[in-house]
Length: 206
Ligand code: NI
Image (cartoon, rainbow, N blue to C red; front, side, top):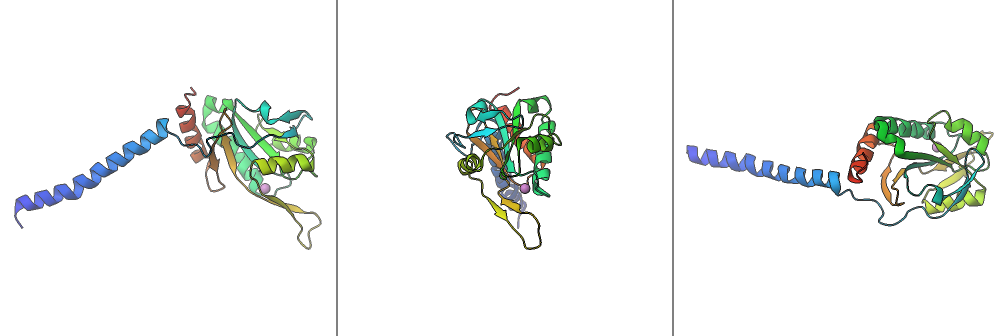
């Protein structure tokens, strides 16, 4: 093989993949900075009427206009709910000052046991800006349906009380009620901070 040929092969072997990577990287970074793609184009969640931790009746309209992180769970949850609520708190801390514009919300899937008082005590363990919502079983049922959350009572033999099986998504919603992103249990607080930060950049939040 002559030298020219080796040079040509080397060029092809390195330059084409590099050009491709640079092209893909540019596309990806453009996507991150100003072309974030929301999960829904329209308003998500639908109407609800619930009661907050101070016994005040609230509806979905009280939260429109705010960035929100919404988690559904219950105060007796042994492991997942506390982990996810801590994660929300840490993700917001990671955003610094900008985190203050996000309204974190915890909505119970267990209205029979989660009274406003219970919710108030529980959320105080996590984040002072958390709102804790409960309601009648029918009101909660409507909220679960609107937000596409699965929840069911589970009664194990040998257990004196029931527990709840439930979806464990953290919804990130925009001021216009679009669902921007769904965080899952495997996402870390740092990943949440990064993705939310990209959204705030895209929406020109300083
Ligand atoms: Ni839970």
